[in-house]
Figure 1 (tube, rainbow, N blue to C red):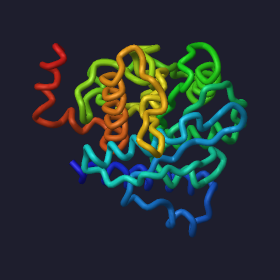
Figure 2: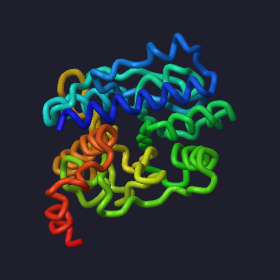
Figure 3: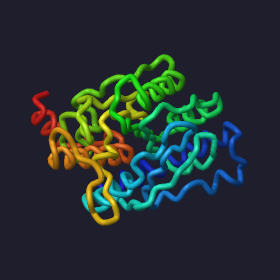
Figure 4: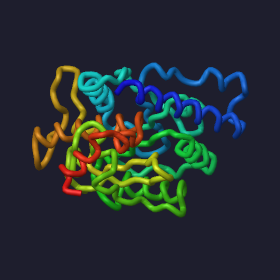
Length: 259
């Protein structure tokens, strides 16, 4: 499995580098220095206003599980990037979360993020407050409407690769079960923007003493485990897209799902 993961990451970085160079955001000499595709790194999107890092330990704990459960060579520590910074294009995976409304992105920031998503990058957004129509959810939906005016967020179907890229899942999970759906924006055969309203980070977060930072409701520890499985699936999907649909076990997956 490791080979297609690395290939997808390398392609994402190369596509993004080419797009940034064409857009004039980097000088030619800088484009050749973009990224180190040897490790998977979570780049957390930093923005103005609100609270861009409400679960500071979450991504590290997810990467711990990714390393333990899969063959992905990942870095435990995340980095923070801003959408106006060309450094965003050095990492094919962005994580955006929050629990409050945030300031609107500038036109340039929107254009940069759209370019990132159109160039093979993946954005996972996570509402840490789990409050539909308010706070982060309200601001994020407004941002998505500017990113893709003609493509509203939509629930991903049950046979989407994000539900079976590594584990076989049937719904969204997180610290809460506010929504059973994972929403996304799909472009051709890929979904570069993935949105969860259930506070995945809250289910992942664990302090340095090994204690879980937040209670998971209503399903307790089983729900927490499923939240990790969903996180692993999203990482694998970001690295491999939907290669499993071309594999011999695809009919078995469909049979298990009753499709």
